[in-house]
Length: 246
Image (cartoon, rainbow, N blue to C red; front, side, top):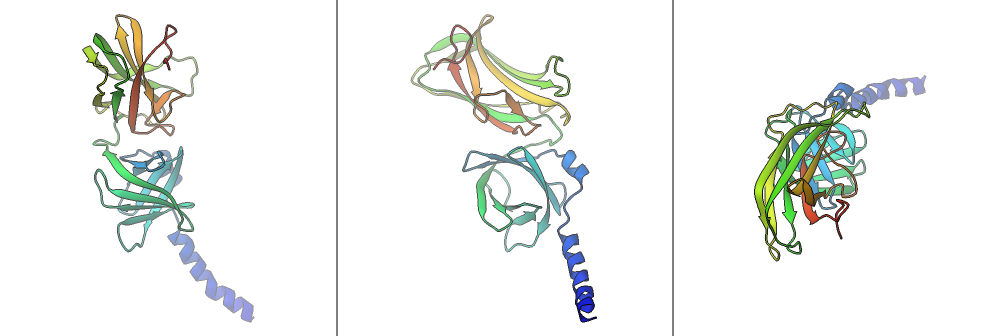
């Protein structure tokens, strides 16, 4: 009888804890649309969607984690099933930490961009031509955002936005660098995949191409399917096959 009374006394506490630990619904995770990007010391990106004053979702290493706000001495602290996300302040340069459930630090990050319209297919970034790259003048730079359906293998990708710079030039021994924004007026389709390409052309011939730094050996995926909102291209010459030269 005593054991039964103890169990009855503990049960409400367990119920209260389970209620406090609840995270946003699976529907909220499915509809994840990040609005803030963070760059971590390790080079990883964390994207966050602050859906209400009490709830948030983050995307880290291509996994989405739903969280609820919890008490903290300073800043905003969100707790999920396996991770803790702790932010201090807002705006570019604001600090954030990602921790495991034991409070051990996994990542130290800083906010790098705020998407003006979180439902837009907006990608921000920069491209850099290192000073070791030989000089050229009067070429054409094309930076393009494509959309494709990952469920249909043989359907061609659709061009949704682009930046074209004619009479583009670079001087060796100087770094050429430029910021860009694409897709800010294009509605994001979370069911689709998106990727970027960057080429420098002499007529129809590719002379240089941009290497996406978050995925240097693969397609430069962005926005959905674990792709970041902010990217960096390093532009290098290509060889006779159209591949980046060493």
